[in-house]
Amino acid sequence: MKNILKTLTELQDVDTQLAEIEAHKGNLPQQVENLEAVGAEVKERLKAAQAKVESDKKELKTLGTSKDEYKTKLTKYQDQLYLVTTNREYDALTNEIETVKSHIQDIVDQQGILTEEVGQLEEEMEALTARQTELQESLAKSQEELAAKTDLTNARQKELEALRDELAGKLSRRYLRKYERILQVRGQAVVPVKRRACGGCHKQISDQLLFEIKQGNRFIECEGCGRILVYPDNEDDISSN
Ligand SMILES: [Zn+2]
Image (spheres, rainbow, N blue to C red):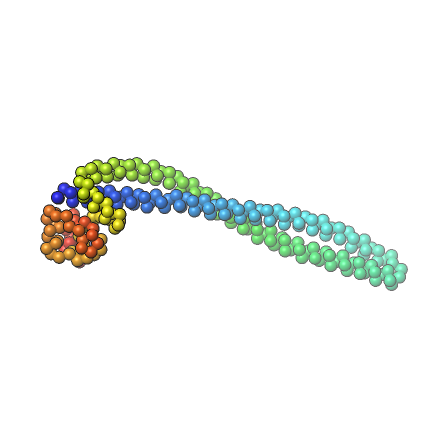
């Protein structure tokens, strides 16, 4: 019986390590995926900002041409003011000049808004480009790490699986099935006694039962959770509080 309990304890240790590997594996690809998603988002934002800057600059160019045309017109009208002979002509020309001036002012206002927007967009693009570089660096690093860890993890996993087969082969069907049933329900099937209680559910253990667990001659399941109780390697766990 002592050997069975020892094998079960070893089997539990292997299964715990395998579960940790699975949990660990599940997290890493997620990290890489997250970085890729953020990178794609930054790329999209950068593309949108670039397109807006281009269209703003195009519009600024059109506005500049338009302003030059109005300015030429204005000079022409102002020159004509000296040539008019009637009040009616003078008023009509003055009206034209005011209209042209107001067009020019509108253009100047629009140019101001667009120039400010271009400035803001260029600042944003600079920040996004920096973020993109940063993301690409950490993505490359994570991918590299993932590849290295996966290789290492796969090797370790194979090792553990072989060990598991070996340990399971030592156990009778009856004990193995019992172990696996508890493992499935509880996540952990074999637990050491801790501070005179079950290491799984913390149910107190009587002195008599504690003695029997220490003897290791009997298969003892916790009355609280059904896990297989074993005596810990480190006796301090029993006495300390
Ligand atoms: Zn328990």
